[in-house]
Amino acid sequence: MRTRLSTEQRREQLLTIGAGLFAKRPYDEVWIEEVAEIAGVSRGLLYHYFPTKRDFFAEIVRAECARLLRMSEPDEGVSRLGQLTAGLDVYLDYAQHHADGYRVIHRAAAAGDTEIREIRDAGQAANRERVLAGLAELTTIDEMTKLAVRAWFTFVTAVILDWLDNPVIAREDLRDLCVRTLFAAVGITPPG
Image (cartoon, rainbow, N blue to C red; front, side, top):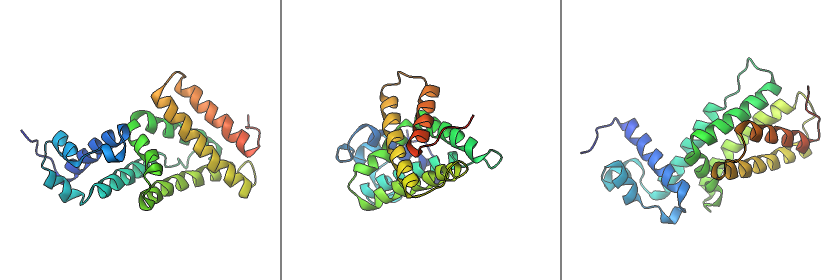
């Protein structure tokens, strides 16, 4: 028996199911029919919300990027430097509690679709700007600093994906590793 959901609840359900499937399998191995079957809806209803599989995948990436940005909104009551650690904690919380979404965001880079990659890149650019704003209290932001922060985000993505698959170190230790690596990448000594 199908459960009656509001339009927004149904849409969210479909995105969650899709994130789970795309996180575990390559794009070409996920079938819209499977999503509809898991949700207990017709394929036509799914296509009503998302006209194509590509639109569906793009919306999953967009929704997950937006969720991460909302969750990591800086607390203006905390110093910029404090926001760096707090932001990394939120980033790790997101990855830990929305592992499928985190994997989908980063799988988007391999999707080969320019628009989908741009959605992911826009979210990452916003987070990079937040990190650079925090670092501006400690160092001059120049092109070398920007390059180091872009590289640092690649490192953070790789270690978090590895940690999600193989969580052998404590979350706090992972966070501290990422913080130390950031300061080393930009060539400054952490305060305190």
